[in-house]
Amino acid sequence: MSKSATPPVLRFAPSPTGLLHVGNARTALYNALYARRAGGTFILRYDDTDLSRSTSAFAEAIAEDLAWLGLTPDRVERQSDRTARYDAAVERLKQIGRLYPAYESEEELETRRLSRRRRGLPPIYDRAALMLTDDDRTRMEAQGRVPHWRFRLNGRRVAWDDLVRDEQGVDTSTLSDPVLVRADGSYLYTLTSVVDDIEMGVTHVIRGEDHVTNTGVQIEIIEALGGVAPVFGHHNLLTLPNGEGLSKRLGHLSLRALREAGEEALAVAALAVLTGTSLAVEPVASLDELAERIDLAKISRAPARFDPDDLAALTAATLHGLPHEAVAGRLAALGVGGGEAFWLAVRGNLARLTDAAAWWQVVDGRIERGAAPEDADFLSQAAGLLPPAPWDGSTYAQWIAAVKPASGRSGRALFHPLRLALTGADSGPELKALLPLIGPEKARARLLGESA
Image 1 (tube, one colour):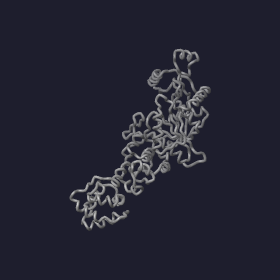
Image 2 (cartoon, one colour):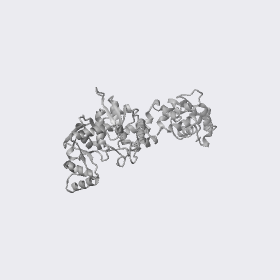
Image 3 (cartoon, rainbow, N blue to C red):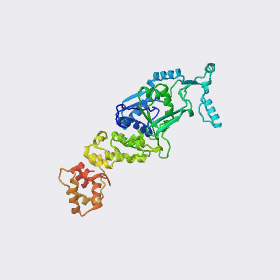
Image 4 (cartoon, helix red, strand yellow):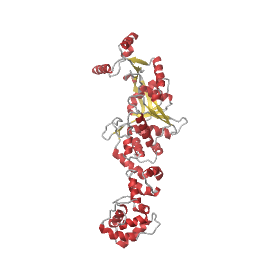
């Protein structure tokens, strides 16, 4: 995926009929990162021709989710604005004899499919509509029947070199002629996607393996309209840990829910695209780094199981490696100060970024003192041995070097009471890093039990 003289154009075309889940994110990321790495264009194209189910609220949610992942489209399109282009394509297909009217109801079609199955035949459309005469069509329309329109397939093997699956092919003689226009006049995705890909100059389409058969059909439609087929890649699909497929309708692992749960966007992105490949699932510091790691040829053919427990661990690991500049704005929004010194002190102990607020309270606020009464004298002694200001990274070691021989304590008996008194917690970031942030005044007061 290196830069070329002709930068690629890729697209992500979600239906704004529900919230995006990690499976959708997988497709969006593959396309966006392919374009990013090759210096190409990434288009967000809303498949919103189903006006009864598409909503502006879901479209806004999609844009918000992509922005959270760090994906900024170079261009945004809405299929609902492009009806005239689809009208023109339909007329052209009619004129060249590739689009024909069919009048069967869904019940009639199902009866025919059952009949073909009983006879051991594939349950595909029998093209009965092509046998109708003009008089037949006139009579049906007089009866109130409104046709849907089917694309007449050539019935040949359509082959392509798949970015993921190598040589692929579909024998369109084994398929039903696809419906491109419903009886109510609305267009199906099979048509609108082809028209848009041609007109927008899409060069590469990366999508789920459930579209393999569609690809054979769409290549025929592209060629019928005089276009050039893009390069296709079909990745495996993500599933739940139990093997169940993901669903927007059921809200499985929606990006909004993962964001609200405090998962890191970079962790979601890394797990979404690296799961189900031969590549190691490891934290990344940026989407650019992730783009460099991706190799479509290393995607498995088997379904990829997305485990939320793995995501929680990857979120923590991601935070542990992020530089301060990557989180500074988000920390400020949480009311967390302390700059880089604080971040470097606590990041290794965070499971979620919001945990940083609790440690900032330890540094800058009041705490519940957890020291045992029997340690009061020891803590008072330790307070008297605190080094003079200013404090830095060496202060804690100097202090312990003085407290250990004076108290005669070592190991847990030495360190645990000090941690409880200073932080109110049994464990956490190294006191070496926290002590200069807490400062002499608070540290002395906490050791003496004068202030929480």
